[in-house]
Amino acid sequence: MEYIKKNKELLRVILAVCIIGVGIAHFAIPTPFVKLVPLQLPYPLELVYISGFFEILGGIGLLVPPVSHAAAWGLLTLFIFVFPANINMAVNNINLDPIPNSPWFQAVRLPFQAVLIAWAWWYTRPSKIPGD
Image 1 (spheres, rainbow, N blue to C red):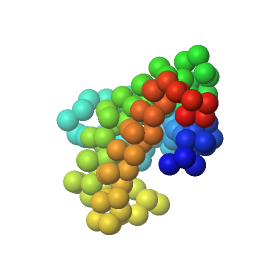
Image 2 (image 1 turned 90 degrees about the vertical axis):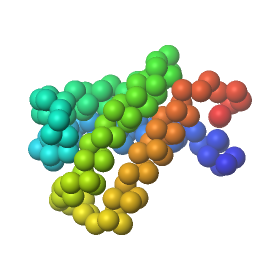
Image 3 (image 1 turned 180 degrees about the vertical axis):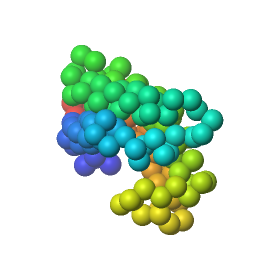
């Protein structure tokens, strides 16, 4: 755990870069993301663009100290709101190349959302000691 605390800033950059990349993908190749939007929700393409925009904004915000706490709360909220798309993918067996389409992968993928939520939550907390 001490290793993780010492590398909190590096992990912040990793999360930010990854989420910015995913956000850009929402605009560059929206079709796979549209397939994940539950049918009950209107305007799936627009929802993909909105979530991509907020992923990019949140990722950038994590890198800007004055707004990083607010950005972390925003990402945490976003990760909760997009969870139904992950459930939709698992329940309806939606295949997205090159993502593996297997029960094993889905069993790992769904709980990973909790990891993302916890990761973002970590940055909502003020640092108590340098590097925390």
